[in-house]
Length: 249
Image (cartoon, rainbow, N blue to C red; front, side, top):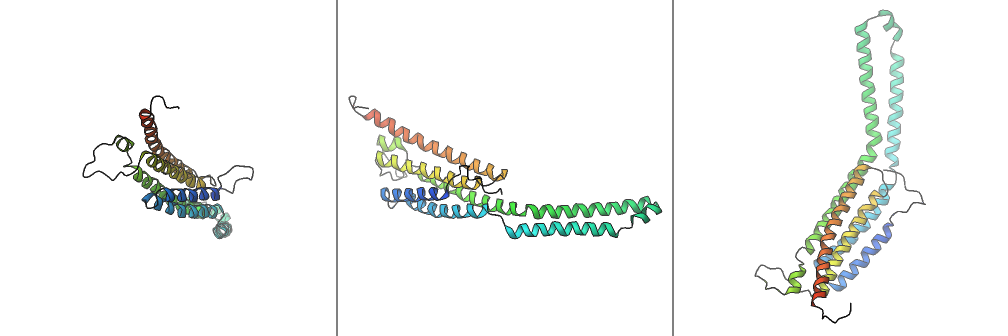
């Protein structure tokens, strides 16, 4: 994880994102008080608060791990120095035992590889732990995006506006065109805010794996939001077609 960005660099304000989520929850609850979308938005608010706190926490260094990593590095260096001093290199040169020299060098190289491998493990442990937590959180946000998409899946504007005959298996469609338009708009806003929550993690790191995962989630929410806006445009176009010819634009 990278250090916190410079004060001169513009970054997303987590508190404003959470505040926007809370306002959206109120709007959805007032318009559709008993809907699953209102309950989902309430859960998203809780997740948004947790995301803001988690992003701040992960931006801070793990002091204990860093102290442990430095300690391991120092101990490894001391061990190599002590080992090198214990080897009687002059005796090895005098004996001119090629086999013995090769065996000693092979053992020394193996110890160096193991030492540097352990050192690399400790130095990257903090980054790997943080990456694992962030990827788990991004998976949760991705699940939210798919659930939002499921809520708008049966909201077909052509059927609502066209008044086609329903079958016994048709979902209940009790919304008028205004309510349907608002419902779809709320879904679109939720998807956009989910992407902003994900961006909180990418804004404070240079980890390419995390940035790529956040970009994938933003692409997902953008594509899902594009489908929703196509439905909203259909509502607008059908409304214009049904309007009287002399009605002002």
